Length: 342
Image (tube, rainbow, N blue to C red; front, side):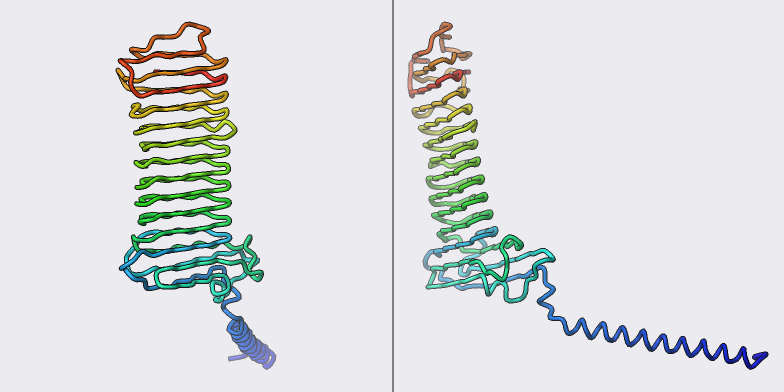
């Protein structure tokens, strides 16, 4: 019971204010939800995805041509009879994507088993603010020609041949049965288990090749070259301190460096020709090898620690000898570097 009329009025006023506050809050919530519903979902997207499957004939190889101005590319064998093209684009909060992003930058043309896939710039989507990744699943019998302006390429498990060029970025190719030609302006090349001859060229960057039975022609303007278990091969470092490391040269081999070292650890199955400007040349040979050595240095020196090979006298700059009856010819020359044989 209320003791006074004044107290009763106070309670009624508080009750009315609470009810009005609740009605006001409900109105605000409804208004906010309504305004969000009016905003297009596409304007808030930071990610856009694309998926498309193209059917191809299994009776003949697929010829795949890919051109991308900026982005990463993966081409991998998955199944025969179809090509699956997927793309993912990511951006920062400053630039929004919409559902039309890929339709505005990606063109796919098909003529039988020949597919031409192109990613072209669009002024509405600044390329520097958007990262794009493409994955293309292909049949085993696929020939690849790819051109990237800037990005990374990864090609795995196809018949080939493969012709991959990137102006700025890395190229990786593995388990390719046919010929491979890989070239980067600046970046690295990593080539593994290739069934046919390989051409690898970098304007500047490292080249790594493993298990290439048909050999490789590797050239870098400035960088290192590493070859492991290769057939007839050539390796050239045109300038700088880039070095050449070889383990398991199974056939003829020719290598030259500018100012870097040259290291070969292998059995001389065929003739070798090794040259370094100001770097050192080091040979690690198996016990009791048979070969013909022709070594020279203009101002460097010899370091010999191999059974069957006579150590040359100090100050000698030309050194020739048949080891264990002779055999394959190893020709070594440096301008000012040392020649080490062990």
